Amino acid sequence: MSQSSQPRPRLDVRGAVDLSSLGRPSTPPPGSPGGLPAPGAYVVDVDEASFADVVRRSSEHPVVVVLWASWSEVSATVAGQLAAMAQDDGGTWLLARVDAEANPQIAQAFGAQSVPTTVAVLGGQPVPLFQGAPAPDQIRGVLDQVLAAAQANGITGRVTAAQQPEAPAEPEEPPLPPLHQAAYDALERDDLPGARTAYEQALRENPRDAMARAGLAQVGLLERTAPLDARKAREAAAADPHDVDAALAVADLDVMGGAVQDAFDRLVDVVRRTSGADRDRVRERLVDLFEVVGTDDPRVVAARRALASALY
Image 1 (cartoon, rainbow, N blue to C red):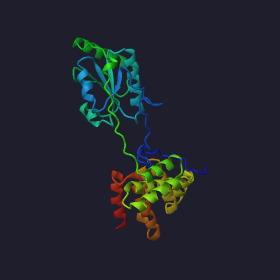
Image 2: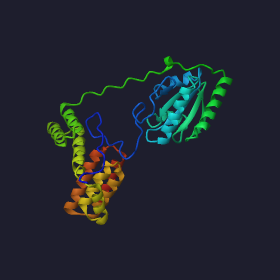
Image 3: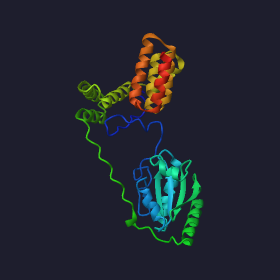
Image 4: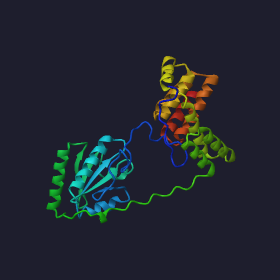
């Protein structure tokens, strides 16, 4: 095997490599292949902007809220089961799906400590139902109790398609500067030299272009890891802790794989144990990886302090 087994990270709309999702499996967005079913007549995806309207409608018909997260397969399973039951019940209640990570204020309002958490809302009042993933027949029994409670309180309306909240329009991204667009297009077609050329030209024209600097660092990471054999690199680093080249290679692989903290810890430790040209090489690689991860990332902030301590 001549190339790294690490997957090529996806690109964000700003033309840089998006490493934010690496190292943590996630469920595709609702309606995408492998993701939750698309919203329907009796299933809506709710955010903080539309949540108040859903709570208001709980005076007309029962609302069941499931708090889920894209990284939690269990929560996606529960959300899918509830969606199927909502469709089967034909509008006697509405399922509101809430991405807890994207909408932390809703999760906090319900006191959710984990996902999945499922809560009913009747007449504007939350009614905790269950956490975790009960068996489907247990979920069915809980829903029957919710419907009975709603009936007892005169909440007997039905959900109609006309009641679906309108999703807010996605804000349009401003167009990329021409050289950034050229770099993005090059990355899309796996043309790393072309992306490097575009970012370098952008920096020549504006040395303060932080986005170009970050993009160039990310291209460098892709260039370094493309020819690596990940297994051999890790074996070399394990066999000789003083092998600086192996340490640098494994740190690159770790960042590509989402193990950012492991990469930073490894290289800071190498800085402590080296001097002269080797120390300078490792320090420069760390600074380069700081650009890749993002200079505002808390892990970068902490690693900068650790690097300063190791150097001085």
